[in-house]
Image 1: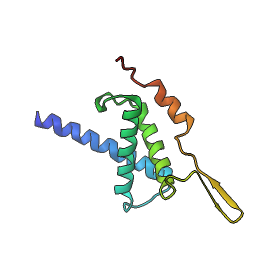
Image 2: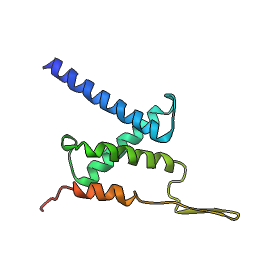
Image 3: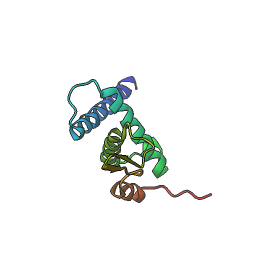
Length: 117
């Protein structure tokens, strides 16, 4: 039983390392200095996906892995501009997207769990 749990844990660690590597490639980040932040963003993205879809962690689908990385990269790029919708400095104006892009929500919408009350 313990050997089976260790193997399961190893798979989880390898999967998270792969997600971290893919996120770092997407963001163009080398080194390990930002790994704690990136792992936090990946975890936050996972929680968002589970909450949005109404699924439990044991019902995670493989398609969510790429969505998780996309959400984490969006959140990384939003750091420092939270709660801003636009900003102007002199003749330069920037607008920020408040929600996740439609392609992400379209994927997640397909896998939402319907609950009957």
